[in-house]
Image (cartoon, rainbow over all chains, first blue to last red; front, side, top):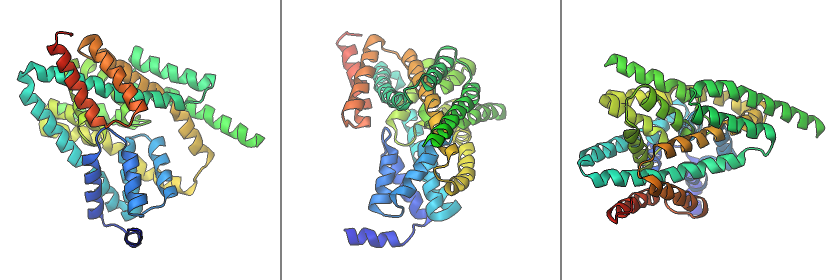
Length: 193
Length: 178
């Protein structure tokens, strides 16, 4: 098994390979945790990238705007097979799940005559909010326990949730301030070290 | 039709560019645009679409695909998807190149650390808005909280969780609780 995966690691995948792999991962990734699956596939099983390359890509994907998973697909695809690899990976992670989601919504629309289907969907939405809330809790816990970052976090929450300001303004306004403060802090701590 | 497609496009491109910390963060803004501003969907329709994308595999931001589909059929779905994923794809392409050269530079760390509070605030706002849109009263809220606990403290399968959440509400309704 180890021999086999080591041998596989020697040859790089084609764009078509990448499309198939990302389609499979896209279609079987229910409810998130995609980064974990990608790492397992590309680093551990196939050995097409090493851990550091992968984690670097993950850092880029998270820091830049965009959906982390699609960013990550582009990064991996680009890394392994250039521009066409990136396009193939992106298509794989997006298209099959998009078609699936549309079919599912058509199915529910057909069933909408039954009141219980509506109740069931409301319950499913409630449980799905649990997923979102747990992600929000994790994100909040990752914020540094200092007055300024916590203040900025609460500020963003109030602006978006309560005042319902356009998100573009909020991010364009608060984002640079937060990044600037962090930059100053890093430079200060760098000088002390 | 063209005007509608253009509306979809120009609504989702800016949102795409401020998606920091994952697609989850933009749900509050998408809801504001789609339900409050453009009246493309009712609160209930929006929540249904949200539930469906959480049940379906793939990125949760495919929510915009469903919105596009609802608003303008196939072309709506296509335009909304391209608007949501296109701009960041181009941006990522450009920046990935420079990023690889200056690994661990201060500006990278500042970007990561600085965006963290912003993303956390946005994600909390998403939950706040979704909770407000929730139907099914206190029972649905209890389901949401129990599900949060299960996600945080167990390794429960997410699809199973969402499916069972629906079943629980149906059973409670039939038992006359809600």
